[in-house]
Image (cartoon, rainbow, N blue to C red; front, side, top):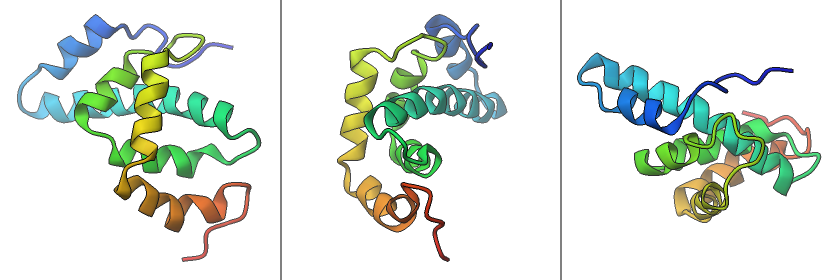
Length: 116
């Protein structure tokens, strides 16, 4: 099974993120997509059996640009680095993430749909 973005390397990510204008929006989306892959792996490992998407969404949506880039640099690796795991853990403890988790992720953590 091939993993998306396995070709992405930190140097390429930094180069893309340094592009001006509209390219910055694209670069942000590339970095978020790469970071999402890594965060999915960390969440799946930390919460076996959990529905990872809502937890990952809360983490990605509350991470800073620097945190996103740090985590995205591990995209395509077999295992996330200790640094990426720490970043995910740090973001999980932030008030905005905790609020998101309580309203969006916790009710759906183990497959229970979130009622809107």
